[in-house]
Length: 270
Image (cartoon, rainbow, N blue to C red; front, side, top):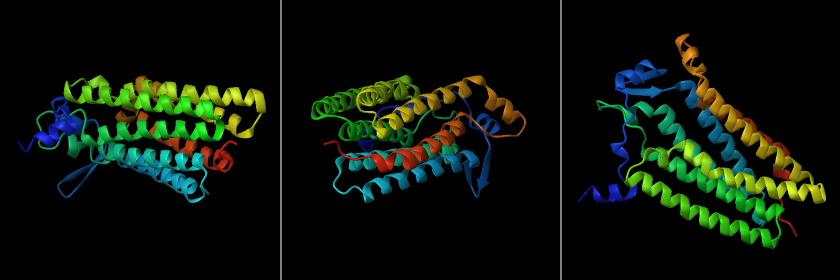
């Protein structure tokens, strides 16, 4: 009976194995030992937690200067959820990856509750961002459409995630599916800002358009680097730098662009 709440919350994710042994993991990762702990990927850990801090500061900036502007509040909450998701990712994908997935096991696990939390929080972050953009760039009509979209897609992703955890199906709780699931959100915001800019030439619209294109290019860069095998070649030469590092460094640049080029322009539409 003690296992029932855990099953309800996390399904059967512990049944999904990575297919590598703990020793194979150690052979293919940079790590340091601290007492009895294996701390994984020190440089990657620094990059991902740096990203989390940058986004958290951006969230604080929006929320502390909201002045009852709903667009700034939703933007700040979006960045807060993104920061928390990034922290969760850093715990499981980076610093405690070995301890959570491999330690004491004959075969390493493929995922952990920290990664499920990451998926949930990041999807929440993007959906909150859609709401924020509807307040700063959309009319009441568009706002209702965006709100309905967020609600429907939130319910849909919840169902997908639960199915992936309980059946279990690896792809349904993967980063790749999450990216595919979020494409319509970024496309929706891009279309809104593009339509606005063609009519009004507002500065915020063109800068947001650039940010959405930037996010697309960042995603492409991640998958190109991931599929290229360059990280393995670098590791053979003793250099640890992988696709996650590319993603996190580029996302830091994206967050800084939002901070210095977009943040001061965010305000509710009349």
